[in-house]
Image (tube, rainbow, N blue to C red; front, side):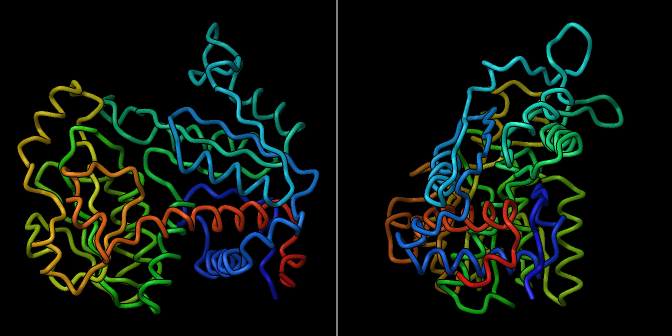
Length: 348
């Protein structure tokens, strides 16, 4: 019997059980197998989703829009800067988050939000996590499902698409080793994808290694949660500052730049100077030879020549385009699962 997911929020993979994630993943595989035929299902006919992108997007915007429209629904995607909404939630700044959430729920059937913002730590210093706090407030205020389209710490729909491509290429991924490695780029990036992939890989019982130069620690609570998931499954969780040792025996390697924990206190130039000290952190053919014929995975966009060599990005072990395609199928599955009764999807 299907688990009814209608009306649920999807803000982090850790909010859902593996059985619930598996159900969404199974439906995504069905959509992919159906191909263009899924467009005739009209599962979401008469439904509307509001997409709010406070940060730029290529794959997420395009795939969510295509997913909704291919299932018969409508998409509203205004520029958040054109709204009266204020994220500050104090007098004199604009319409409150609460009022916005409680109004738009009367117009649409689901809301997707992408937002990154700092939040003060216990000492008052800015750190990553503000976007996560904002999206959870929004979800608390509104009665329609809210989908995380990328915040500071989580990118859950991307993470499930990454699991999907690993299953396609490797079969049973339990016990397989994934290495999530920091890679040099002057294009500074947030933490959500490395964290989300570490967390979901642990949930799917993989051995997880996160490799980075000293000084590039990721969010401690999410990393701790990933470690606990690995321990529960009897898998290995490792943090390494030795790149060559880290990739030994890897089945999947995901090279990705991310900024330092002091990003919101440093200037951009300071962050770029810090990153430039580690230009050798790059996925190359020679590094790939140390692995177990590892697949190159990346959420994209990747910085060719810095994060990864062209010969690897365009080589036979690259699975990035299949990975990107799976965003469409996974997001179709989430939209259908959150907006209609799951029992009606069993016959697909």
